[in-house]
Image 1 (cartoon, helix red, strand yellow):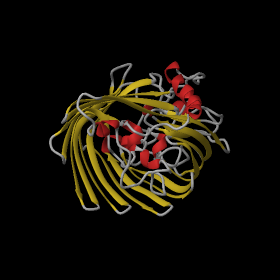
Image 2: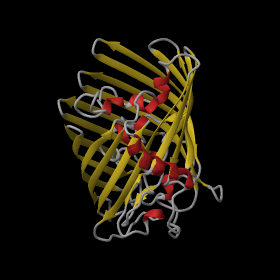
Image 3: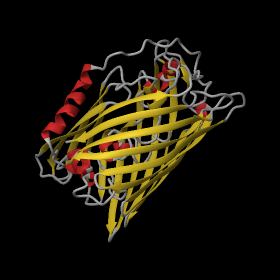
Image 4: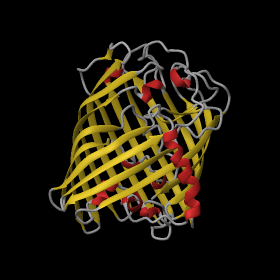
Length: 429
């Protein structure tokens, strides 16, 4: 994000000191689940990520060839007339540490001594004190199988980071045209990158979070339709998805990290294509998406970035490998956003090793912009991580993670260097 593309920075807002009541159920569930023992992994999210159960899985966590799916996909295998509920949650504690550095970006990032944006889309910002607010979340998904070929899926997600903590993130109908073809219509997650569909489900991956360098954008959902084709030929699995739609985000949390004034973002004429293949522990994914961009000051109605001109474009490549106790996850991506005067490249790579119920992961990630206009600053940084995951019960996991971040923004540091310490308790049911 170019450092100069927003209007003058407003004074920092008073910090939020208490979590929303809408997410207190997350904490209650997190405390009760260890007392309840094993969580059945039979429906919805539990069915999608059952491969992470060490008792029934390949040696390393979730397999790249069979990533978790939404409960809507799982619903397609149930009898007509059935209704099911499933869900997930993550209780995440974290803080930053390091030498003080002034932030050049303003907004909610202007106040603390050190800072780390863990969730760009929802404004999840860690500061130099311990907090549960930036990433704690829970989701409840409902599925109705109306007919052999027709099902409905909805998902409510509660987040402590948002001023409006309860959001409808999924609401779509699935029509199975044939065993290989599927049409979905409604509200879904934008499938920009490998983890996009299930990045809120902390239990589905071995680190506390997918790297924000890759999974950090102003819009993550869309309203529209998608057409998917799947095919299996022996051990080879193929999938292709075409999507069309639009999204409108009011009081956008992403822009609140840069400027505290309320803004409305629109992505119009979204068009995307995803290609996936997997075989014998290998998986690959190619994605491309483009859309028109519009940005409006919500208080005055002033259009700050109008529609028109070349569309913004996002492209991604993921290559994953599971062999024995080892798991490799890697992604590369780039974006070109002419309306915002920048292009960027970014990547993540992690290597995990499983030892019984524990998984150790090391990784590197980076994000770097290039300005399309002279005189504009650019944002960039890179970092290293170490993470440890412990399976507690089927469907529950505890994680610890350390990140070291280095600011590479130009012409001067934008957010500064920092260390990040975080712990999470993740569950599915």
